[in-house]
Image 1: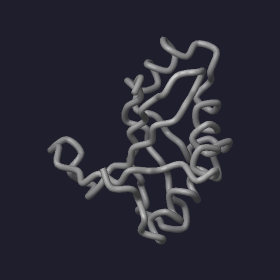
Image 2: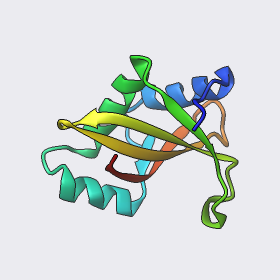
Image 3: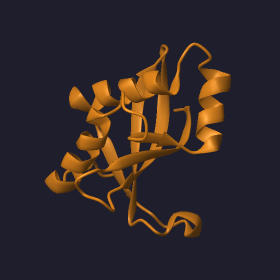
Length: 114
C-alpha cells in the first residue's frame, strides 16, 4: 500500500494523534476495543493510542488505502499502521474523521497481529 504523503491529511492525522491522551480523539469500534481487552490485557486503550502517537511521531509509516468496502464508503480512504506493541507487530486500521478540520478524530476500526 502507498504511504500517506499528502501533507494536509498527514497534518490532520498527526493533530488527532497529538491528543491521544484526551478522550474522544482516538475512538474505538467495539470489536477493536474488545480485541485490545482480550489480547493486550495489561494495556488500556490510551496505552495503545500513545503507542500509535509515538510510532507516527518517530516517522512510522501510515498507509493510505482507498476504501472500497461498502460498509465504510462514507470515506475515500482508511489508514493502516503496523507497529510493535507488547513485543509483537500489530496491524491497526483507522479512519480519519475530519468533518471539522480544526478538530480531527481517529477511529480505530480494527486491530490484530500483523
